[in-house]
Image 1 (cartoon, rainbow, N blue to C red):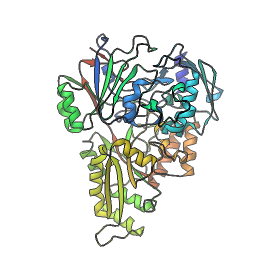
Image 2 (image 1 turned 30 degrees about the vertical axis):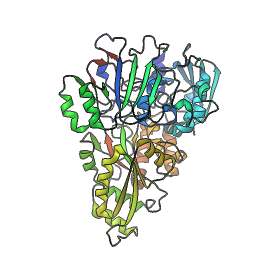
Image 3 (image 1 turned 90 degrees about the vertical axis):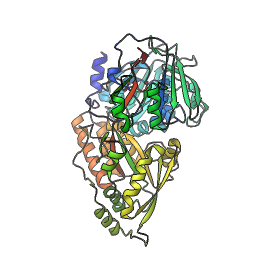
Image 4 (image 1 turned 180 degrees about the horizontal axis):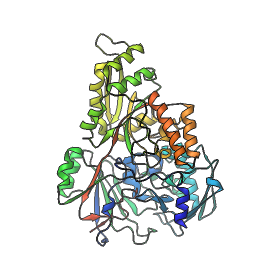
Length: 532
């Protein structure tokens, strides 16, 4: 019965296993599944590049938050290694009314970490008061098509849509829709609630300790609803911003797991007999990622199409691929990653390196050079992890007369300044496409998602035709027809350049060989992990 339901729901949403996806907030390897009987007990230490800032993953799509907080929560469904939805907080579901109504039967006996009973009221509250307001991908995808959510009984939730909506099940996992406790958040502002630093979830691990810029520690949830899980007693996330320091800590045995292996260290680590390395796999929202330059279109200079096109012609993205990503990935030419072939458009307008063309465009836009050779200044606000992108971009654009000021900030501060305060000229983000463009792409381009929301439409881009095409794609149950809409969207975006797509990033994970069972496709990274 479950298989038939999944097949029905997947008419519009299944994307086959795509090669070479990009790194995101989940980790590990399909080959890391148990080859020996898992042992109960022990601690795993995971290196985290950024401080999560808080532990409420329902109010953000930030990879640094989900990477740490994912083990605290569950979604209605989980996505397996093939991207197929499997039961999680919901044990089964039915789809009716031509794809307009989804009815979920919830598991009985699930408890929050504080011992209170989980129910359909928590699901309804999570969507209506948190996810649809603050989670960029969920808000962008559902707010225009969702007619309502009903909770007719404690164990039943009904989603009603205004039109057929094929991608829903792909949107209900722990990355796209972590369920939070109504009794904890009701009556609070979910973005500032005290519970964000002392969270209560239903997940395999419970909160124990959070020391800013140092570590986050979770302990085993003895009452977890999945029998026998988790195996580990503790999960510790150590905040280690420097990639080189992470690698040294892994080699010394001070940490057990890295979510990303720096390019310069890859060959050496692959030869180690103490480590397991695996190319990143396809996951949910945190996969198929594109490092993307964000133009603030409220800036009068950047509102000029010729200026944005000049950036595209002036930046050497091949050099970025080589020197920043160490060739782990490919130059990006479109808003949808090439690793989603059914939706990707390879024939969009392209902008090869051509600084003479860039200069011509700026001249035609009336942006003349001053005596110092510069035409205008822009402030590039970015997280420190994007510093090398900034250094190269500054050097690339100087010959065309664009003076780039580099403002490097801690990741949460950079995100707030870009997406919340809108205090930037240029920004940058790793926009992860996820398994379906409806999930990870739409949020950056539809006009309804302009606002103080992390990883939303940061450029402030508006095009009614693009909005219409995204709606058309979401309403179809024919993937070929959906692909046509997405290719048309990419054609428009490539001509208007509201963002500049730099690199489709890839990566490797690494962990010590005395561990197994990490799940790259699940936000609950360590749910099934164990010592050998």
